[in-house]
Image (spheres, one colour):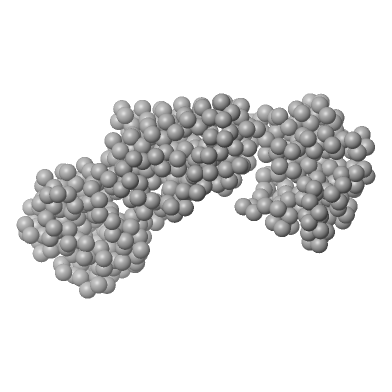
Amino acid sequence: MNVGILGLGLIGGSLGFDLRACGHHIIGVSHRASTIETALAIGCVDQASVDINILGAAEVVFICTPLGLIVPTIEQLITVLPQTSVITDVGSVKTPIVKASLSLWQNFVGGHPMAGTEASGIEAALKDLFVEKPYVLTPTPTTPASATEVVSKLIKQLNSNIYYCTPEQHDRAVSWISHLPVMVSASLIASCLEEKDLEVLELAKNLASSGFKDTSRVGGGNPELGVMMAKYNREALLKSMHQYRHKFDEIIDLIEQKNWTHLENILKSNQQRRPDFL
Amino acid sequence: MNVGILGLGLIGGSLGFDLRACGHHIIGVSHRASTIETALAIGCVDQASVDINILGAAEVVFICTPLGLIVPTIEQLITVLPQTSVITDVGSVKTPIVKASLSLWQNFVGGHPMAGTEASGIEAALKDLFVEKPYVLTPTPTTPASATEVVSKLIKQLNSNIYYCTPEQHDRAVSWISHLPVMVSASLIASCLEEKDLEVLELAKNLASSGFKDTSRVGGGNPELGVMMAKYNREALLKSMHQYRHKFDEIIDLIEQKNWTHLENILKSNQQRRPDFL
C-alpha cells in the first residue's frame, strides 16, 4: 500500500520504520530538507520530499504534525489527494480535530498512538515503538466503515492494542490519566515554591525524595506541551479539574473534622484499585 | 557507648547495624520475642530483650516505634533510665512529639532520618541505610546542648547529612514534600474512580501509562501511613493543602480564561525550579 506520512518526527518516523518493514511503500513529507535527508538515510521512508504534491499517489496518509498544525495541514493535503484516500492523524486530543477534519474530508479517521519517549524529532524515531502500546481510533457515525478498516489493518500490523471509542470518550479518558495529572502535579510544585519561610523552602528542597520526585514529575515537564493539553482539551480537562477539586476539598474536610475512618477508607480503596490502571 | 534501640523494625534494626559497626554496644528492646531472636541472629544488636529494664545502662536511647507509640514508650522508659541519659526518636512528625517528650524528659532531642524502603520489620533492616540521606534533628531552645551533641555525633557516624531546624519548620517542610503529595495523589486516584461513564473509566485504565503511574504512586500507598501523616501533622498539612488548593484554583481560572501566557509562565517556572528539589 502507498502510505503517506506528513510530519517526520518521533511518531512519524517510527510509523515509517514499522509500516515499511511490513512491505508498504512509505512516502514522507516534511517542511525541512534536512529532515527529509535524515529520514531517507535512516531508512524510515522509501521516498520523501518537502513538496506535499508527492502524496498524490498515497492511499492513506498519517498526519504526524504538532496538534495545532493538523487541521491546516489537512486543508493543504486535500488539494492533492484522490477522494478515495484515507486520512488519519496522531493527535493527543480528538474532539476538535475530528470535528474539523471530518468537515474537510469524508474518509478521515481520528487516531492516537499512546507511545513515545522523552525525545523528539526524526533522530528519535524508533523501530517497534508501538508494539503492545494502546492505539486509539475514534471513528464517528458518519465515518465510512471502509476508511476505519484501512487504518485498523495498518495499526494491527504495528502490533498495537487498538481501542475504539468516540472522540469525546477519548478526550475524557486522557484528561483523567494524562492531562489532569499534569495540572495536579504542576500545582504541587508551584504551591511549594510559594512557601514564604525561606528556611522551610530550603529544608523542603533538601529533604525531598522519591515521593515528591514522582508526584512532581509531569508538572515539571515541557511547558508548551502542558499548555497544548489545556488549550485543545480544555473542556474535558476543566471538567476533570473541577471533579478533582471537589475530591480534594472532601479530603481537606475529613482532615479538618478528624474523620480518620473515612479518610482511611478512601486511601484503602485507592490502594486496592490503583493497580487496575497499571 | 551504650546505645539503646527501642523498637526493632526497619529503622531500629538498620540503626543497630551501623552503630554497632562503629563500635557501640547496642541494646535492643522489642515487645515481640521473635523479633529479639531475629535481631540477635542477624547481628544488629549485642543484647536484646522484651524487658525495657535492660535499658537501665543505656547512655542514649533511640525510640523507633510507630509514631503513636513514641510518647507512651518514653513514659515507660524514663522509669528505668538514669537522668543523664539522652532520648531521641525517629518519628516523621516532630512538633507534638517534641513538645510532649520534652515535658517528660529534659535530655530529649527530636530526630527524623529520611531513609527507608517499601519494606518494614526487622527482616527489612539494612546496613548503610542512612548514608548520604538527610537526618533532621530538632533541638529547641530548652534542649541541653550536650544532649544535641551526643545525638549529632552518633548521626555523623552514620554518614547522614544532618539538618538542624525547629520542630515546626521540620513539620512544614515535610508537609510540602511528603504529606501534601500523598493527599494530592490520593485525590487524583479517588476522583478518577468516580467517573460515571464506565466506558470512559475502562478506557482510562487501559490508556494510563507512566504519567498517571508516577503521579498516583504515593496516593495508592499504605493507608495507615497516610492517616498517620494527617493525624500527627494535621496543622501543617492543612495549611499546605489550602495553599495548594489556592494554586490549583488559579490554574483552573487561567484555563477557563484561556490565559495561555500566564499558564505557560507557571509551567516554565516549574520546569526551571523543580531540579532544586531533586
